[in-house]
Image (cartoon, rainbow, N blue to C red; front, side, top):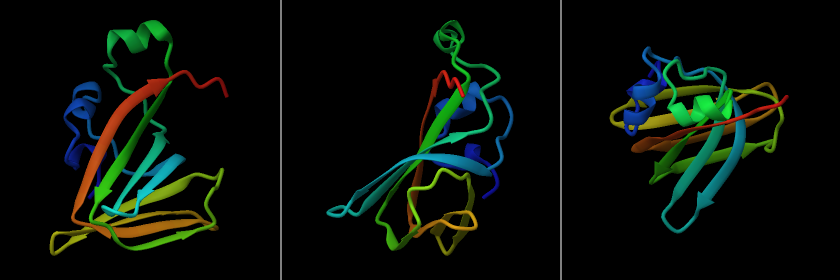
Length: 129
C-alpha cells in the first residue's frame, strides 16, 4: 500500500487532499489498545497539510494534520521503546487479505497484523513549534 488515500475510511481524507498522500514518516501522538476486542488505535501527525481544508480550519489558522489508524482483530503485536519523540516510518503491506502494519525507526517499533485497517480522521490543529 502506497498512500493513505487507499485505506478504508479515507472518504473525508480524499475530500481535503486532492492528490494521493504517500504513506511515510509520522509523529506518533497516542496508542490505545483494547485487549477485549482486540483493537489498536494509533494517532499521529503527518507532514502534509490538506490543499482544500474546511473553511473552519483556514479561519482557525491550523497548520498540522493529525490522522490515525483503527485496526481490529489484531495479532502478533510487538511494541519496543515506546514512547518516542523521533519520527516513525510507516509501512503497510497486504498478503492473503492480512495487513502487516509497521511503524519503526532505529530505536522503536510498533508492528502487528490485522484484517481491518481503517483510516481515522483527519483533524487539524495549530502547531506552534
